[in-house]
Length: 208
DNA sequence: AGTGCGATTGACT
DNA sequence: GTCAATCGCACTA
Image 1: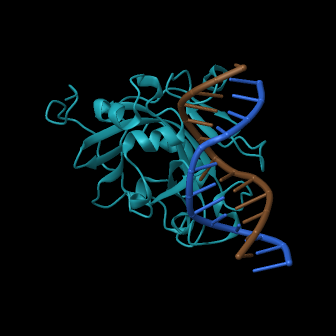
Image 2 (image 1 turned 180 degrees about the horizontal axis):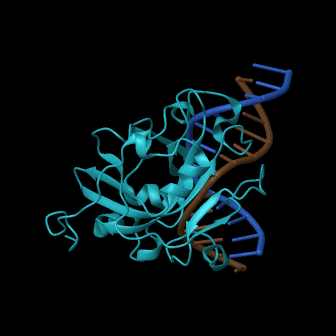
């Protein structure tokens, strides 16, 4: 068991209310850096500090919502604060937070976490020991947190196993860059990350 | 019904 | 640095 279980830490994160979340995808992406992501399962509880996000804004050709609402992307059209989980490259799951109001498609991809709780469980799920690699990158993050299709569409702001929590310590300076791995709208500065964090994905220059 | 490719990762030269 | 893995989706016809 990790030393940071909830009974040892009287002041754990508090679940964020929907009213606290900025509606705008870009503002939400920046806001989420430093916040906590928590998943409670029968296997145990895992949590991490969000250190990297990307905004996929309204009308964004790089966003999954661009083609209009479909069976796959319907969660992006839910009111802000819902999970959109999609299957990437036939291999990995990726976790997003829906943004904007209902029926408007936009969201924030959560790309990397600094592991906080349940680190041994994360290691078991990921099959690696390296702390910095447990949730560095969206596919790894979902694997470490045990996030898959079952969580697509869940409300992160109501009682449930997956939720967003308050920041556990002050947020460092937030850097901004182009988004990773896209070809459309590639010049837009819609990636946000905690500067200097070793838990941010990409090359070293992307962490500065 | 068939096709092309993607908001990735890990293994390999 | 390059590249295969592996699937579902959106699009064409």
